Length: 105
Image (cartoon, rainbow, N blue to C red; front, side, top):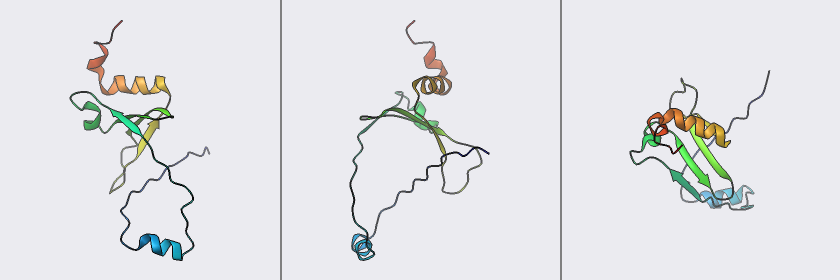
């Protein structure tokens, strides 16, 4: 059976005293990373409305997050992340097919 990489991302706002408690437990800040992303969409927000997220991360290239497998329920969201340009373009043509006819030849 092939193994797939699953990324789990959870966002939360730590409460007061969280940093102190982590330090008491031996936690330390090893390093801090700041991302600079530019997000793109159509003037009508077609991508956002379809739950697609096209971004260009500084120093990392393009990425398109697409809705994942149907059937994910509850507060969870599953996305497929495309990072290869031909796959990104093909998926964008599926999401915004009417725009394809307006591309220059």
